[in-house]
Image (cartoon, rainbow, N blue to C red):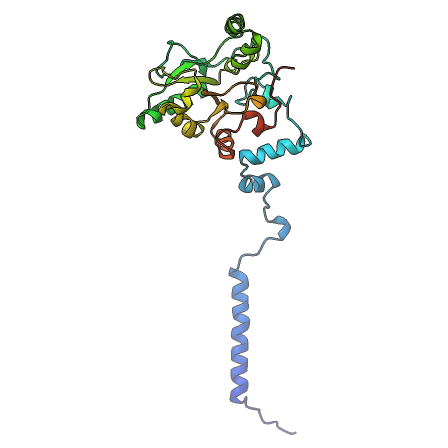
Length: 275
């Protein structure tokens, strides 16, 4: 019967065995404490709407481009936003009459000095006007509100008076026919200088009040409704006292194109004379 000698492990073999065992032990521990990763299909994904909300920051110019693209790049007359009586872009000019007998539902008297003691505006426009008058006062400029909302009946009286005095051809350049007045929207304001010396005259352009309004009205959402040398576009002669509220973003966008840019030009709507 033969006997076999027991083979001794060499030092390097012993080390290999020890380190191998430690490695296996480490893998086992890691697998126990490492959280399992969810399959890609189970990871919550952002919806298209959520992604759009984070990245979509439209400017007034982009909105306008979208409108133009949707309408084939043509005039947007008849678009709901310009005929919607609740819109700040409600349009009244010689091509676009207002609904018969229209009167805004949210008229109120602005808390500002007035020429005649009453000149109501739609609530948002009235608030913006109050801020604008306060800012002007801080700059040492005194503004006075001359006229705000005018009913269709009152506009009829004004237009008839001008027609009787000057003839309808002249009346059409300085006054609106009833139902076509920007004032009837409740978003338009005639603004006077502090003493009325240049009120309702084109000399208002050179008065401190007229200069301040031209430079700052857009900051409060107002644009000059009938700028200089734009009679053919707006249908009316230059009125540096007549300002129209369209909201701060749009007013800034219009003014940034040109200080004498018109509502009709910016929004691509038809203006000019009566049909």
